[in-house]
Image (cartoon, rainbow, N blue to C red):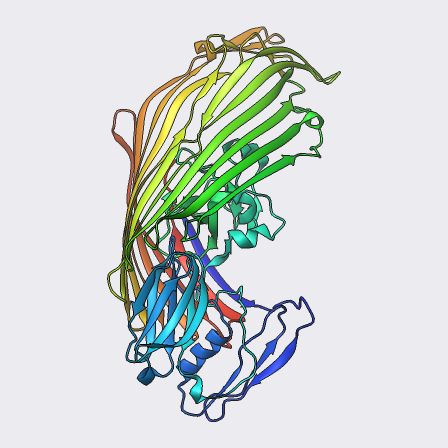
Length: 624
């Protein structure tokens, strides 16, 4: 269990990147105090306008936010985003049409009595907003919707405005609508950053995240969130949990080209997320559009510096290089209705490392043939389905050699160990806008992982000679012979309802995990010889069976926009964890793990440059 209590005050200032820099003033007599907006960001322009007396403060606040294109994330979703806005002059407005630019899908949104409108469950991407009056388009604007984000925007007749000085756009990196800590970053942004091409390296960009110990690289590496261990995190791809449920270490391996958006939650996350006392890595994959695309890429990576030698390892003999080739294609299957994205990635990784005391050297080769497909289908503009399938199956072949550390040379070849890793994964989802205020999503998916470890000479007994360090003797290759597979089945329902200033969400989140296990020592036994003591130890180990765990949760939360600059989120999650032994009997049955979540955010200036926020939450971790 983790208790998360946080209070922060954040200030945001853009850096000047070129010569464009100016001061601008917004003069609003008899409405709100004079606001000074200092533009110090480079490479763009900003809309500034003078508004006549009579506009309400709330509409003015929205229009200022829209003019500056401040992307204020107020609701954290699994795989989608939201557009929320207001029409300044409702007498001259009929509707708002929202169009997915890449896919050509359009949706008409009704306008409330106060001029407000909202459309949710939108896949991240670029959208065109058109305001209609008497059947004619009176205003058009494009916006970018990010993963888990809500973008605020104002539309309306500009005849009430006295002056427009400059027109343009900027994007704020400060999320003034949520009390979560973390980041959201797109694949286009990642390309511009000097970041290694893996999920852990992107995660390290978020605040309070540090690299895990390299000892756990066997499990895919790891990162520590706010001091938690690397076994306390959870990783999602398009809503599918791909975390290793045996020990919490690692997750499914996906090529960088497959990712579209990555959301990192380091603390304060809502009741929609659980099974983690560390952090959440929530990613979506690329999708197709009405435009056919095709591409290839090749990457080569080589380690040029090694760690210092230790008593056990001859690290200056280490070698590591990776070759990766990718090919992808995307486009419409049925224009404006059905789209695909497909990727193949071939990876060849070579690694060498040597032991000083063990007298053995290891030459490891990993071959991976990843493939992934994402299908997006639109039944209507309000109802769509998604299907994601990918395979990260791979074999790691580790060759074992005799090694003389005195002359730093390998000797005779002993044999191979073949590690089976990865597996087939898929998730299908339905996302529906039941009306302008209600959305429903239903998902089902499976995640599999191979856990086999097969030595070439598996009938040879394992023998260690302690004199005084441990030396491997005999022709055995690996001490353990393991055949196993992990399977996760998930089912989830989420329902949301916008009611005036409240956004209510409720959902069910269920996972059933099963594994098969058949593990013994090589040759059925291990011998430990102690010549100085004149004794020996013989160990025998066998673990065979099928094991199951089940995690069930439901949640309820309400996001209340009390004022334009102040919001409160109240949530409650209930977790149940059940573990069964090989006989199918429960040996862990933990229910009613109530996890309250509370957060509040205040934007003191209303300009999206500062925020004061606090959050409190209880978080529970399932038993491995």
